[in-house]
Amino acid sequence: MSDATELAIRVTDLTRTYQSQDGAPERTALDQISMAVPHGEVHGLLGPNGAGKTTLCKILSTLLVPTSGSATVSGFDVTHEYKRIQPLVGIVFGGEKGLYNMMTAADNLHFWAGLYNVKRSVAKERVPRLLDLVGLRGRAHDRVDTLSRGMRQRLHLARGLIGDPRILILDEPTVGMDPIAAQEFRNLIRDLREDNITFLLTTHNMAEAESLCDRVSFIDSGKLLHCESPHALRRSMSSRHRIVAKSVPGDIAAQLEQRVDVEQVRLTDSSEAHIDLTDKRAAQEVLFFLTDIGIDEVSLAPATLEEVYIQLIGERGMELGS
Ligand SMILES: Nc1ncnc2c1ncn2[C@@H]1O[C@H](COP(=O)(O)OP(=O)(O)OP(=O)(O)O)[C@@H](O)[C@H]1O
Image (cartoon, rainbow, N blue to C red):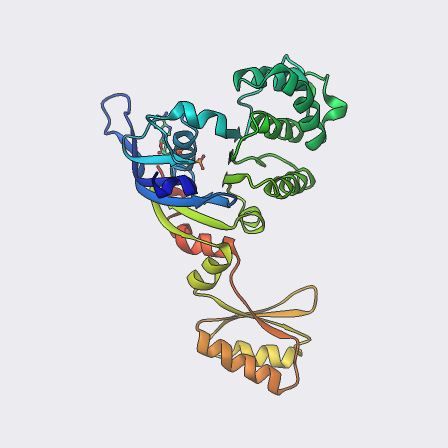
């Protein structure tokens, strides 16, 4: 057996192209991507519109075949052993796909249980349990078109779990949810981690990726740019050095702003000063200076994942993936 069996997902030199209509050149959605995701990891797929994230999710859930290269899920090849993969993988696509509006929440889950070959007796126990898990037991007998968008997303998650998957692929699962519903959804994912489910999560929400993911892969124009923990990425990729200090007097803030290596000094509502500097050395100097004059609530703050994203991908903005 190959070492791929130790991994939930292994992708090797994976390329996927799409034929275009009207004789236009074919489009390369994934360009020789390689990555490995161990069991139990929450792995984020980040990148701009058209980067290739959904294409990767579809290949791993055996909805699409690769053009070249290979991918395995729990050691099974997506092209040749897709029947072994299907029972292991749950898919949750954001938006409207995958639920039948005219059917009730419970009937939708029973329907999908049938497609996943879940025994009736098992489904009878599992459907109410999953509805409970996603907070929809009270709406079990309501038609899907009477549920709010956030509720439908939670029902999507229950649908993704109906086959008792080992790997759950979530493609923008919180899109369109209000902040509370999205928070509850994230809490659910944290709870599910306890069951050692592996998650592949596509999101444009950097705070979500930062709070949920063990590691993230940045994809841009079908290529993998970086694959690291959010924390490591924030530390290694950031060219920004920010000092956060409490109770900085106005004259000191003004004095710091005069330094050539200080980009900006911003005073926040919580009486913190955010001092952005051009390099690490300058940051250390300012750090020493502040502690010297008795300001002891002072620290270096790494960039957020969102800032790293903008740094990596932002400059090309809307051109990407077009
Ligand atoms: N069925 C298709 N036919 C032709 N081209 C496609 C098809 N599906 C996707 N593409 C193209 O492949 C590229 C990658 O698309 P994909 O949907 O994988 O990106 P994405 O990263 O998921 O984007 P988004 O964040 O907008 O959902 C894009 O250029 C897209 O236009």
